[in-house]
Image (cartoon, rainbow, N blue to C red; front, side, top):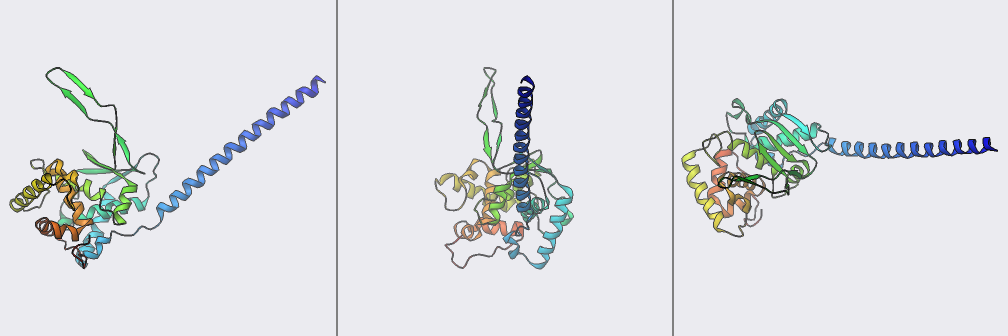
Length: 277
């Protein structure tokens, strides 16, 4: 009798173990299928930036060359489980290189302030800034992290892949252009909001006037109010508007539109209706 009980017990343990193994296998298989489907979706050929239609044949050839150069020179890092593939590299490079298509740009360093691109699947958290109160020697720390879709720092640009893609779909925000505009700005450490190769006399006149105008407006029709924080943010917001809302920018801010047309050496294709973006 004791032998039968022992055998039954052993059988029960073995049966439970088998069930556990099957459940674990099914879970791993399900996770594998989800990852595989996600990878296949991302590997699909993504559309090129719609702004390519604005370019001359010479500029399009320069864009292709700059994109390949960008992919060779910059190191991509996937974060929070994102697996980097060619679609990620080419999409980010394609949007970033719209900023460097001026005649002779292929002979200049390509975003030398950026050596690597970090990609998150979606918005990401960054530690809050630490504020030091010098007169009392105290350090005040905000415990709440900030949610970001993009960030530019020493040697790197950090982007939310989900938000990179929305720019291709016509969203007014273009986080890739915004952060790489910051990278251009950082190439001139003695100035803020003035990228290299700009006509600085005209640049400062137009940008200063328009920056002050944005600071006065509570609800500007085109430019993101975030640009009122500083000249550097203003330049990046204007660059976004140029590529994402050229018709609206030309209508409401003609001086800015003309300035960026000359700087980028690109003439956007404007909508037939002056009121559309």
